[in-house]
Length: 282
Ligand code: CAA
Image (cartoon, rainbow, N blue to C red):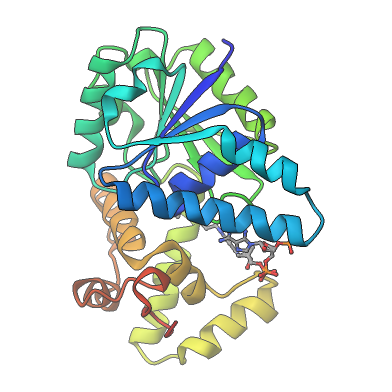
């Protein structure tokens, strides 16, 4: 299926990144969020990223202007009615995502594909909120979206081949490389990544090492571009906790229990870079 009009729900760090790559690839993109200040902040982030690319000579200023001119914003979800493809990148809360999918299913025409950037909520559970489960799919980008090459494409039980193929092809249009995963808690990326991060938090909790030393071990010993605690701060500790809870609930296996220290930080509002404090101070 040809996608001309592309909608993104959520203007936060994942949402505005997806908008940037989609608009850069030549699509007209509509970015929505619940408040105008959120869409304005998302748009400013994209502008800042593109300005940096102009300064580095990667694109010229007319490319930047053309990309920005393809982006429009709204706070009314009903405006998604004109889209061929909508991807939801709202915060990782099941009740919120369920409501968004019920609304999108009502507003969008039957041909519209509904993707979700969920990092771990089962696609089947989200799809069941709609009357078009065959058109619902996991479209999972990595943070920071403009930089990371991978997109995880997750088939729900009911996802049809056209929905899968359209999503798979869009990854290449966006200059990304897709990997196919099936619908199990955490899919592939977070099934592997999050227990590693959680174990790093346990190392801190049990005083096996200080945050800097834990991260140095993984950066220099395993050649990871950043240590697990710094990465947790980048992802957001609330998101990390939500993913661990999904793994724990989904498998009922104690190996996925979230570290109490992770929960304590989240309860204190220490969510990482976005709040200025997590395992490090920003
Ligand atoms: N937005 C846009 N561009 C960004 C960016 C951002 N937030 N952060 C960095 N960049 C760009 C920089 O501008 C720079 O671009 P150029 O190459 O054109 O100069 C490039 O990325 C490299 O940045 P830096 O030189 O500042 O820093 P770095 O080399 O240390 O790279 C990094 C930063 C890309 C974040 C790197 O440390 C990295 O790859 N870290 C691991 C990230 C990761 O694992 N992400 C996956 C998280 S899991 C996830 O997202 C899934 C989930 O469900 C939780």
